Image (cartoon, rainbow, N blue to C red; front, side, top):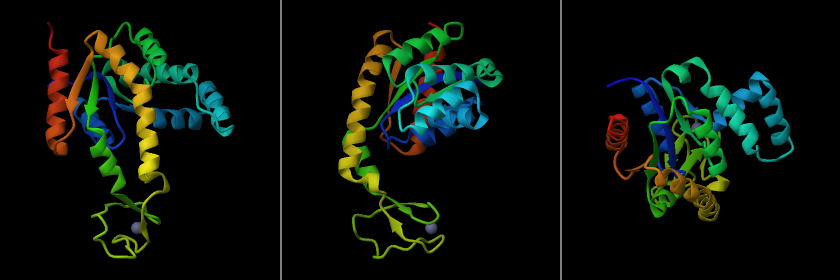
Amino acid sequence: MIPGARLIILGRQGAGKGTQCVRLSRHFVVPHISTGDMLRAAVREGSELGRMAKQVMDAGGLVGDDIMVGIVEDRLNRDDARTRGYILDGFPRTVPQARALDGITSERPIDCVIDLDVPRDLVLARISSRRVCRDCGTNYVSTHGLEKHPWICEVCGGDVMQRDDDTPDAINRRLDLYEEQTSPLIEYYGSDGRLVVVDGVATPDEVFVRLTAAVEAARRPG
Ligand SMILES: [Zn+2]
């Protein structure tokens, strides 16, 4: 295995992207760069872009493309990302962001864009069965009402509940928004052969094997 990779990972919420990004980041020895983490870091470090982002977020707005692109560009210009690469998670979200990213990475182009594909009905079922301890945040999986009521956390004795935003209506709204935003991106990266669809319906170990094989294949010359 040759360390280093420049990857973009797309996938529905509940597709297992977070877990796989952590594993890929260890495997290829590259930073896992997630939009959310990047924004929080920029705000914490008080960079100019971070201060601009904070103003927008404090006013309840969504951080625009120009600020996001600036934050990503700063991050990709750091030593670790310049020399070894990165896994971009949560960026780009729009075609204008993807075009800007192509400009930023023209000297060191991305190896491939992976669409970690898990069908909508399956992620809906996964997210709907998610439960969490209100006090310590431990995650649980509901066994379709067969669990005891009240459900007490094994770790801290707190109440285990469903998050307000994990109801089927709320999940469907988030999935609709994802499809709406991502289908143009899938077309954008699909049109020039950079998109690799990886079937995410398998055990985490099996999905990881598929992902690393997809990256190796994309990096093979010719
Ligand atoms: Zn707990």
